[in-house]
Image (cartoon, rainbow, N blue to C red):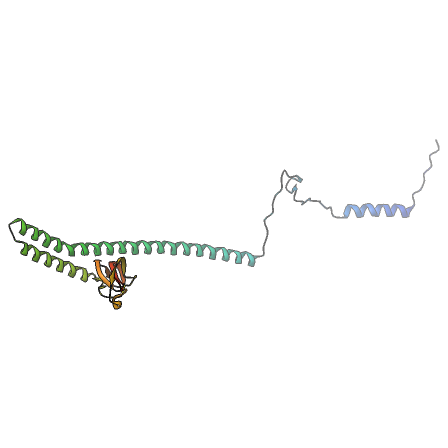
Length: 215
């Protein structure tokens, strides 16, 4: 066998050697897949979607923290105000109920004197007293009762011989009158009306004159 040595071109040999040396000397790079569906630790596909939390600059995080703290303190203050308002309302309601109960007690106590007078008048009649004594006792009792009412700012409404006022009286009938000047005038009071200050407690029941010239 005729084996001939074929010389290698020195230029090609030098270039090939140079490229080899350059490849071996070049730094080695490692490819890391950072896609969201890949596990970066094991470089294997992840089983699910991993939501990345937003990253903010430091000053933005500080502002967010201040806002959160302000909201927390605001909610605490609102809750405190609500509690104080509820306590104040409960205290005022309790004070009002105590005042109403006390006023009712004083009112009822003031009328016990009226009942005492009526019972004494009945005892006097039972013991053989005459009608005159009974009548005098009833008059005194009525006067005392009126005084108690006046002390509570309760007064009778004067309607007799005055023009009929539907705001104060209730007409339950008419009475024919020959005098035209008495037309529409209260001529009879069947039930006395009462007022407490400007408030109407009970309207009077009256009969009103009606002009009838030929009656």
